Length: 497
Image (cartoon, rainbow, N blue to C red):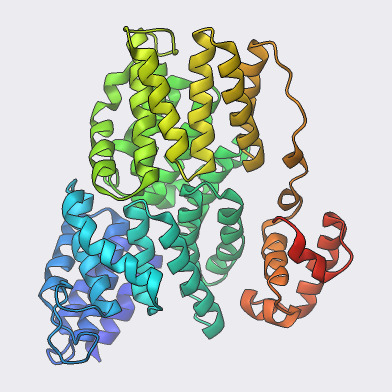
């Protein structure tokens, strides 16, 4: 009973004080757990390690991991011989524990030692149903190794079950992981939809830390959409909270502010925002994917040396995780640094052979990236490089594709960059079919309602999932039909949303 009471206090501290306070108190709770109930101790230690990771506190994380690795839990066959390190057990809980035990290696720059145990959990998450804790650990772990697809699948299943069972406080946590995974894979509409559901629920439940983290994700999305006022307002609102409590949230806010300046050509200011992201306590967590933005800011401001350590971190990570996304980001950095060989970071011709290298690196970056946003960013760099080397036809092809990609994603500031480059070639932008993108006509909640309705759910079933009334769902759908130009529910399934 004492263990349960202290564990509950620890979880409350996550929201009311900080993740670090949660992690420290959860370690105390684990010490109180009965020796004959290792499963309870494991649940408490998983809470501690997840909170320590969120806190960016590797010392607390190592304490939790060391205790977790010593626990012995029943394996999937129930014979009691399973080791929490995962070598002899394939239960979801044991696989999740083994993945967590690998986190310090990943976050301390030893990805080669972390990939195998994390990979086993991700395979299980793809192949069979898991409980809530293994699912959310799979979500975190997938993002850490660049497997965003598995992170999305595992966390979507968890969010669906949390809704179905009324586990209200789990919903924002699941949707946070899901929003980050969608953000990193370039599905900004899906990320925004997650926030549309999670943020009001977190605020209503008094989850102050979680609401601030969700606000940090919203700030990043506002930045990539070119909403400078919205991004800065969110940064002012949630920045102080995440700066004190949640380093990954703070890194997202700084990354977003850096993106605003980078897209606007304010490279010195972008560098000042992005350098702490890529050098700070969570630089080897998912903010490692900000490194290409840091490199671009450093190269274009004439100081590529300021990105050298971060590039080394990214290249080491990309070399060991089985992720095309990671490799594509590293290739983009390599191309940018080859461009810097011209001396001014502008993409002017540099050393002999540099042009061929840049072409090859960016071609591979475009081809290998699963993210439409990262593809468009690589194409923009490539088009700018080609234009400055007077390869006008090739430049136009890449810039048009980049602009089309940005417009489809709603990344308006980046689309403006592409249009400006095309104008310098003497080309006028032409209308694109996706300018009438139906999904952009809807609010995030309307989009969520429509997707569920298109999947065949009734108003009552949708209302139960979203914790609103069926009447509210009917109200949303009546507006949606007019916006989408349809008259019947069955037509929704035929639309590209």
